[in-house]
Length: 285
Image (cartoon, one colour):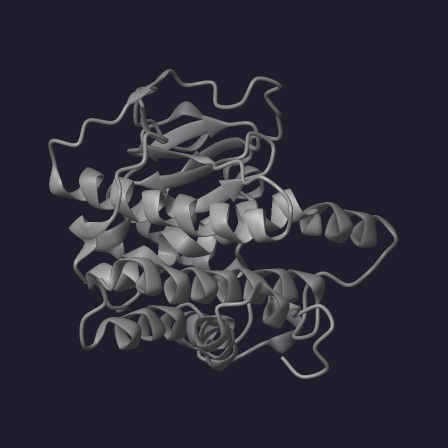
């Protein structure tokens, strides 16, 4: 992936709030590994995993600073995020609206958000309360060491694009509708649950971004799409549960199977059209 062809985003910041772990205690390596596995298996809200139910009214509590582009990883994140901004600005303009990009917060160890406190154990996540994407700077290393997923550039870009996909859902009102359905008693977990459909739509949106970014930048190289699909296949509910428990429990699915995640990314990438990403209307996921 020729990622340096992307424009640098000004919306990448670093949290300077320190790297303490669960409930303010330092987190051991063993605890981090356990939490990482639990986070990827159960896909809990960060507040549920970390026991901090408080909600900040002012976004992330930790001080934030502009992220310097003097290291390769930060520059990579800036340029991928810049591409998502360009792509989604065009999509929203076509819909007669205006795209409001999220900020992406780089942190190490733990961070406080409008959704509560979170550690690196939960993986990258989007907080609708402050409209920010959160990414621990060591996560990409964990993709390979803990999840056996590809760490190629485009696999890492897919991870960012998926979280930005949740921001797009927030702007389009999808998250609000899901919350309303939850309040009415709609099933969230399970192979056909709303959580799975919401996550698969974010995968599809990541595919839409990949399609349109390639048209704009011509930055993909042989093997890049396969790397993204490899990453998607390693974070399916069935794969993670089989690795951790030795068996698959569809009733507890929250993100979809490996095959479904790959399929919906492919759908978005093939079409480059968000109209093809209506997972909520799909009779077969």
